[in-house]
Every structure is written in structure tokens, then in C-alpha cells.
Amino acid sequence: MGLFSKDIATLHDLFLHTLQDIYYAENQIMKALPKMIDKATAPALKKGFEKHLKETEGQIARLERAFASLDEKAKAVTCPAIDGIIKEANEIAGEVSDKAVLDAALIAAAQAVEHYEITRYGTLIAWAKELGHSEAAALFAETLAEEKATDEKLTAMAESKANAKAAAA
Figure 1 (cartoon, rainbow, N blue to C red):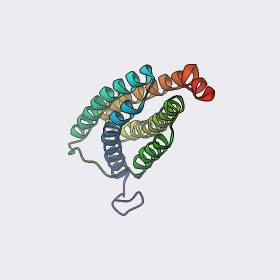
Figure 2 (figure 1 turned 45 degrees about the vertical axis):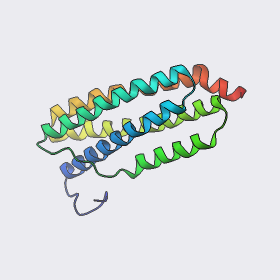
Figure 3 (figure 1 turned 60 degrees about the horizontal axis):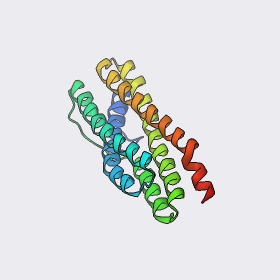
């Protein structure tokens, strides 16, 4: 189902498609995080990625509850955007030999993921409210708060140490 396909005729159809999209994205992120944990060299970055892996598991469970609240089966549709973000992160990380620069690259890649998630959850909250899906909106709001907090932690990590270490490398 493409974004402008005939299968999307209503806001509910678009909402459901976007929910399936973020469900796919969260599952792909969960698969990618262990690789990022392995590549990270700064202990705080490793710990942050480990924490986010646990959060992602909870976010997937929340999405499954949102599907259930809509009387829908949890289903994923391929998300080319997250696939591209993860592919780019893997390519860049594979090209960086300096550990400090690698950590800066991993932070940047993680922030690209977070920003994508923030846009999706913000949109889902607005549409859920419009469609009267208050339980789903509350679940999405909980996840959105986590995603924003993670982004802020990554920014702080980059600005306090990682970028300076990478610049000195």
C-alpha cells in the first residue's frame, strides 16, 4: 500500500497505515540497537543505547495495545524511511575508524531515528484525537515523551563530550 494508493481513502485509513509504519519502524530499531551498542565505545553511549533498547521493547508493547484498542491486529507495513535511516547509519559507522568520530556518528544516527519517531508519534496523536481514539492517543503520548527525552540526552551527550572528542581526533 503506497502513501497515495487507492487503499487509503479516509483519515482512519491513513492513521492505520501510519500506525503500521511505526510498528515496523520500532521493530527495525529494536533489531538495529544491539549493533549500535556493540559499536559504541563511550560507556555512557553504550548505556544510553541499552536503556533505549528496553524502552523500545515497551514502545512496541504499547503499539500492540493501541492496535488492540482499535480492534485491529498488530501488523507492520514496510517503512522505507526507517530502512533508509538505518542503512545510512550502518554505512557511515562502517566507514569510520576513529572511535571518537564513530561515537559522534552513532549519536547523529540515533538522533535521526529519534526525529523520525517524534514526527510519527506527533502525527498519530493528532489523528487519534481527531478520530476519537483517546486510549491510543494516550499510549502514543507516553512514547512521544520517551522519544523526546532520548533525543535531549543524545544532544547533551554530543554537546558535552562526544563532539569535542571527535573534533580532537
